[in-house]
Image (cartoon, rainbow, N blue to C red; front, side):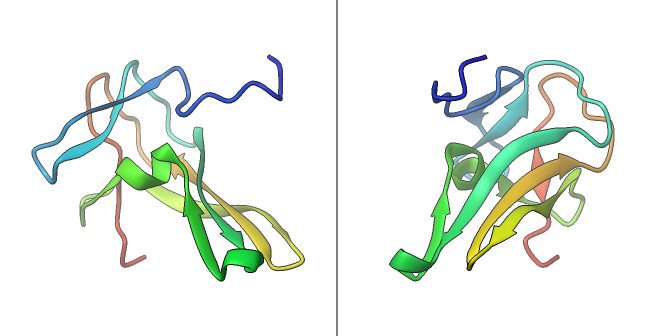
Length: 101
């Protein structure tokens, strides 16, 4: 894989209409627990806030979440948050975070 090639989402995820709110992120294959789905938010000090990737921009909230955020990288006030699965996720199931955690 060429690290300079940008793909808005991993090959195993897609954006589709959500019953929760507008559009969401959905699994295109069965996903194992503990799978790193990629970067969702990046804290960039120069802009005094966070940049959301397509993954972070379309992931919906649920108290019955199947994923959570973790800090992938943290250096000099730059922070990269990734999403990791906390349960097995079936094909066509929506990827969900609990925004309160």
